[in-house]
Amino acid sequence: MMARPYLWIAVALAAAGAAVLAYRALVQMPELPVVVVKAQAIERILAAVGRVRSDERVSVYARTPGQIMSLAKDEGEPVVAGEILGNIDAGQARAVLAQRKAAVASQQRQLDQSRRDFARSQALLKKGFVTRAGFETARLAVERDSERLSELISAAGEAQSRLEDFVIRSPMKGSILLRPVDPGQVVDVRTVIFDLASGGAPEVETDVDETVAGDLRVGMTARLSPAGMNGAVFKGRVTFVAPRIDPTTGGRTVRLSFDAAPKDTPPGLSVDVNIDVEKRDRALTVPRGAIGDPNGAPFVLIVQAGKTVKRPIAFVDWPAERVIVTSGVQDGDQVALDPLSSPEGKEVSPVAAPDSP
Image (cartoon, rainbow, N blue to C red; front, side, top):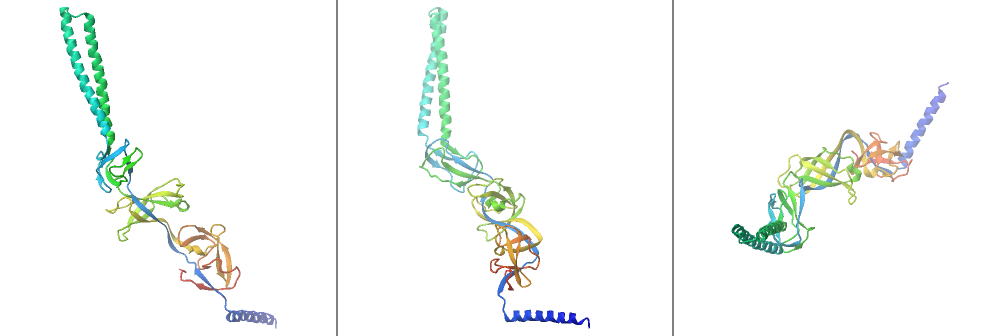
């Protein structure tokens, strides 16, 4: 007889459960699209677009202002160190040189005459036909004319050297990357005549936003896909991460090298870059859109025992459709695709969305 109260309690609970099930059957719960969290291997990849750059790039300027008379090279053509690339009008400088050479020739004739006069004075002095004072005057004339000739020769040498300032030469071996001017234009010493790229191994340069650049390290592997190569992918690696942020772009310069560079990679060629930042054998991920207040107190809306539960989380903020959750969710949790689609504590009917892994 003592067991009968427990029997009545069990019957009452069963009846209550049946009533709940009957209620749920009669009253359709609102459907809530969810994704099911599942631990899986993931790769964290940074996608960017870069451009091929040479390992060295140099701008060539005129050493003196003037009109460009000729340019011997055009964009894309190879050059060697010291090769003449063009000329600036040097007409006035040549005229100055001609004047100074004429002055040297005239002074040389004057010195030759002074030396002849001095030789004659020496001979006459021995015979007593010239005074000592006359002899000294002839000697001093030779010294004076010799010094003047040296000055004029030096001035002519300077004028000759000055002509080199009107010659545009290549400072290195490489190729013409850019030629922004044409013959006939007047330039000054600040005008870029040529941009040269060295003939070394090509690099890819890109600008990475400061929010993610801090995770990049030299040596990270990457996949590089140059434009115009039918989607061909080449292995590469990070060779440089700028230590400072460019205030004009808000990013940091990142350079990558090819493990084996393709042949046709001219400077300026666009390259799709995918850097392998991190690999995890087991990680929990959710769609970025499933996170509420991601910049403040991030949370997700989980369906638990048929009701919505707001749960705070921590996650790796990364520019991707799915993000890694480091705390707050477990394998098998049902997470609402829209964290604001339902108030907390509401009874819902979870429906797995196609996005669910």
